[in-house]
Structure formats: structure tokens, C-alpha cells
Image (tube, rainbow, N blue to C red):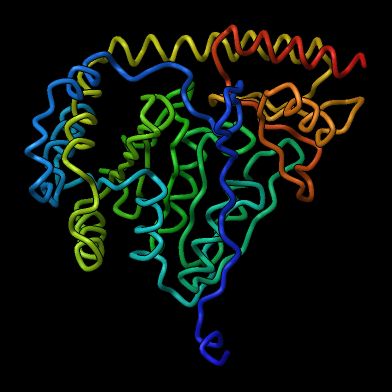
Length: 350
């Protein structure tokens, strides 16, 4: 079949399992709590006749709400169908040099997939023994830089000062900071976008705002960066985010108390979970996200992963070098975590 010679072949990203049966699902870093009540009200009262029309291509409803929430100009905000869509668009827009882009060797596993899809050269930089970024690794010639903060799947948070050091050292490259988990204990780099015109900060509604099913992501940056991204977006598909998602996203931003309370509940459960995991003999870097990257010290991570599945508890496991000894455990409700700890105790004492 000669036509296959012209097919773009890549190894796709593998998402976490989405089991159909009722399980304790701690494998995809979803929020265990529902969105703000006012989002439910929007769904109950939505005028279905609006579905017959194309949605606003600029997603102005959501962009304006984000601008108000983060005290920015609408022209500094780009929205997409989840942060994956936003980052994919950023790769396509900004990473067009012959020089390799840089990202950590242990990080979000979609980065190398996008690089392969868009034919972008890349180099991975090793994390230190304690899973931290060495800023000196990101100060040579490059075609762009991206990494999450906190990192995934490790949960390790880097300081804004360290990140600023990297941004400052790369005035000729766009630096993308993927802040999917920043609300669970970190300080955002958003305040730096007016200081550095090469900085793009990406966030999502999937984690802290409990809206993974709605698919809302956004980027903030210099107005010129955002215009370039919109130019690319409108050259591909102008109507990417439906009107119901735009309205629900804007509504979710209004209830700051619910957002704060929900995030704090997850943080409290995470800190309690660290204590329990240590008691069970697990080691892990100090997570500032809504998951813990935990290494058992007696039984293999893969064995525990399979045994938990038999008990209908799903966590994330990668059979890859360096990280195959670890499990990534999403923080669920207190009840879900107690069920996990009971199961882990039974497995470890089996």
C-alpha cells in the first residue's frame, strides 16, 4: 500500500483508563467534587435554541470573565478546548525553529507527542535525583521551552524566581509554563506576563474547577503572542468552543468562595494522605498538586497497581524507565482515600 508512505505516523498519547463500571477512580487527576452550583443552574435554564447558531468565535463571554478574574486585558487571553488544545496550538504557533525545544525527561507525556506530530525537534533534560529542574539546562540555544509547574507526574513545585531566571535567559524563545495544578499550593507566573513578552502561561478548568468534562483551557501572555495564537486558530477552525461551555466557564469564575473551599478540601486530604502513605512505607516527593507520586518500598508498583484494579480502585502506572517504581495517586474524597489506604494495607500485608 504505497499511500502509507505519505502517512504521518506517531505514537499517540495514552490517557488514563476511563472504566465504565463503578470504581474508585484515582487515575486521571479529576476533581472529586462537582462544579459550582451556579453551573448547574446554567444547565437547567439554558435556552436550547441557542444551539442552532455558531458560538462566538472569540469566546468573548469566557474571555471577558477570565480578564476580570485575573485583572488582565481580554487581548491577553486565549481560550481552547482544554489546556491540551491550548498547548497544541502554542506548539504549532511558536515552535517553528530548526533548534530543538526543551522539556524535562519526566513530565507530561503529551509534549513529545505534539513535537512528533508537528515535526518539531526536541531535547529532554533530566530532572535531578529529587525530581527538580536544573535551570542551567535551559540556558543554551533552543527553539522554545515548556514544562509544567507543579510538574506532572511528580507534583514537584518550582519557585517563581527560578522560572523567571529561565525566562530571562531566553529572550529569543517562547517559554510556556503549564500550570494545570497551580491552584493546589503554588504561586502562578501570571504576574510575569507584563514583564516578559516571551512568556505564555497555560491553565485549565479541569482540575481545580471540577470541569474536565467541559474541556476548558486558557493561556495568558503578551497581546502579540495571543494574536499569533488566534491567527493560527482561525486558520484551522474558528468555532472550537461551544456556547454552553463558554457560558458555564464564565459562571464558574463567579463563585470564588466555592472554588477556594473545594481546593482547600483537596489540599487538606492530600496532606493527610501523605501521612498515611508514609505510615504504609511509601516514599514520594512533596506534592503541591492534586496527586501524589508514590513509591512502595516492599512490593513493586506494578503489582500494587494490578491488585488495586482487582479491588476496583484505579491509580496511574507507567512501565517506563525511572518512573516504573512509582504510582500516581489522584486525591479523591476522604472516604475514597480511606478505602485506598485500607486496600493498600491489605496488599502490603498479604
